[in-house]
Image (cartoon, rainbow, N blue to C red):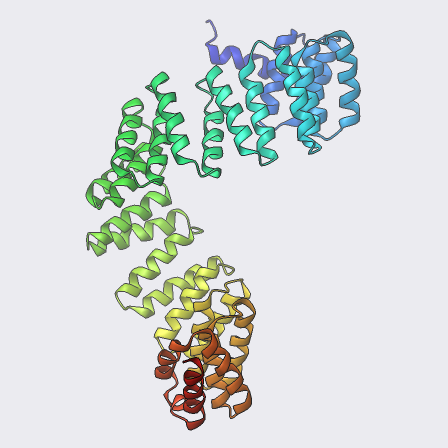
Length: 466
C-alpha cells in the first residue's frame, strides 16, 4: 500500500528513532537528515537534533546544509566562537550562500549588536532569491532596537514579496500600534486587502483598527468580511461580538460569542462577555451562570472574579460579594484589585478593622492611588485611630505632595489630636493649594472647622487674598 504524504514525511523520523533504539545503522540521504533535524528543532528536542546532525555529518561529511544546521544549534546554545569558526570555513568555500550571512546576523543579534546583524542581513539580500524572509528578519532587528518606523518599512517589504506571511503582518500592525498611527494602519491594510481580498487576517486586523478609532460600523463590516473569508475564524466572531456589545446590540453580541463556543474550545473571555451582555439585558440569572462558567474555565482570570463580586455589589449583597472575593484571594493572594475590593466591601459592611487590614495590603502590593489613601484614612477615623490615619496620609503626601485634599485631612486630624501647631501648618498649606476645597472638608470634620482658631485662619487667608 502506498504511503500517504503524511506517512512519507514521518517515515524517515520513525526509521531514525528505530535505529537509535536498536543501535543498527541505517543510511539516509542528506535531505532526509535535514527533515529529521528540522522536525526535532521545531518540537524543541534539541538533543535528538544534535544526534541526527552527528550521524548525518558522519554519512554526508561535505553537506553544507547539515553544517549550517549544526551552526544553528551552536548559536542556540550560545557557543558563538565555534559557530563563527565553522562559518569562516564555509564562507571560504561558499561565499555566496545567504544562510552563512543569516547565521552571522543571528550571532550578532544574540549579542545585542543589532546594527551588525542588519549589516549581514543586507549582505544576505545580495545572495538570495527569496527576499521576504530576510526583510522580515531585518524588521525584527529594528524591533529589538525600538526603531518602529524602520521595522514597519521592512515588514511592508516582506509582505510585498509574500502576502501570506501573517507573522510579518502581525508585526507590522504592532509597529503601527506602537507609533499610534491607526490611520496609517488602516490605509496600509485597505491597500493590502485590494490585492488580497479574501485575507481573513487582513479583514480582522483592519476591523480592530476601526474599533480602536470607534468607527464601529466600519469595524463591523470588516469583521463580516473576515467571516465571509473564513466562517470558522473564531477571532472574527469574538471581535464582532465586542463591536455589537459596544453598539448596545447585546442579543446579537451573545450570538457571536456563543458561536465561538461551538467552533472551538470554550474560552473564559467569551463566557465573561456573554455574562456582561446578559447583565446589560437585566437577565441576571443568565449573567450569574456565565460568570460562574468564566471562573470555572479559568480560575486565574481576575476579571471573572471581579465580575461576580461586582454583580453582587450592584445588588447590595455585600456578604455574597465578600464570599467570592475571598475565594479569589485564596487563588491569588497578590492581586491588588482583589484586596481593594475586599477593603471596599468591609467598609460597606462597617467591618472597619478588616477594611484597615485590606487597605494596608492593597498599598503594600503597590496601589498608591489617591482614592485608596483617602479611603484607608476614613476607615481609621471611623475606629478612632487618628494617629495611624495621620501616618497613612503623610505617606500619601510623598506620592501627592501638592494635594490639598490630603493637607486638609491631616490638618483636621492634628487638631483632633490637640496638636494645634501642626494643624495650623497643614491648614495654611491646604488653603494655598485649594481655598474653596475647605467647604467640602468642613462637612467631613464639622467640629474642627467650627472651632474659632480654624475659622480665624480661614478668614485671615481670605482677606489677604483679596
